[in-house]
Image 1: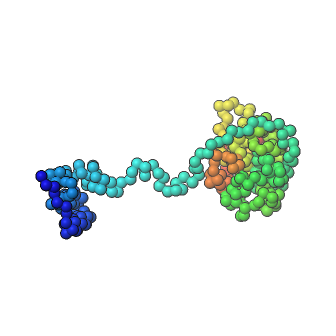
Image 2 (image 1 turned 30 degrees about the vertical axis):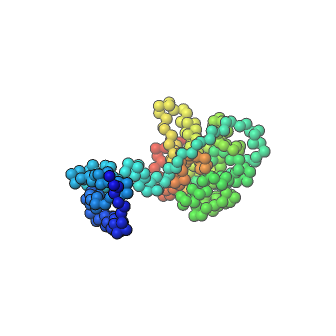
Length: 331
C-alpha cells in the first residue's frame, strides 16, 4: 500500500488560511461551534505519516456544551459562569486596606524582664516633677524609663507615643519635644510626675509593693497641687490605685477597673486659685501606657482616649461633668 502523498505548497497555504479563519470564528461564535468548525476544516487534509482513518474523529459537542466546558478551561457554560461573583479568597480579604486601622499583625512578644533591684540602675538619676498648683491635668507615669533618666526628661524614648498622642488629641497645639517637658505647666496647664521614682528599663522590673508604696505620697502631692484631673499613664498603675482606694470594701462591692474616668475623687479643703469657694475636686483618669512596647493599644486607640480626656476636661471646666456619684477619698 502506497503512503499518503505530502501536502503541496498550495495545500499548506490553504491549511494556514483555514487555521487563521478558524481562530477568527472562535472569537466571534460560541466556543463549542468554533471547535466543531475547526475540526471539520482540517478533516479534508492528510498529514505525513497519518492516513485519514488515523486522524482524531470530530467530536459532536452540540449535544453537550457543559461537558466541553468541564474539560476546556476556555469554554464556559451559562450555568457555570462566575461573572459577578467573588471567589472564597476575595470574600476573606478586607474590603479596604484600612478596614481596621488600630489592628496590626501580632508580633512575637519578648518575655518581660523580671524584678531588678535598685542597685542595677543606681547610676541613673531620678527625674524632677514638672508641676505647679492648679493645673488642668497632671499626668502620672509609672516610673522613669532608662532613656528618660539618661537624658533627664519625661517620656524620652523615641518610640514612646506620649508626646505624639498629646498633640494629635489637641491637648497641645504642637508636638512638644521631651527636652521641653518643663515648659508644660506654664504653656499648657499640664504637669508630669511618676508613681514610682526610681528608673528602670521596663516597668516589669518593679515590684507591686513599689506601686503601693508610691500611692500615699502621690495623693498627698495631688492634695497639695490640686489639679482638675490626675491621669495615670499605665493601666497597671490605675488598677493598683483603684484596689488601694477600695481596699476597705468587700470584694463583691468593688467596682471593676476600666480605662477612662475612675470612680473616685479627691475633694480639697481649700479653693483652687480663682475658685469662688472651697470644695473643688480632683478627678482621676487612667490611660494605657504610651510605651511603644504596648501591644494591646495602638496609637489610634491611645489618641482616642487622650481626646476623650480633653473632652472631659472641658466638661469639668464648664460644670457639666457629673462627679456626684464618685467616691470621696482622703489624702
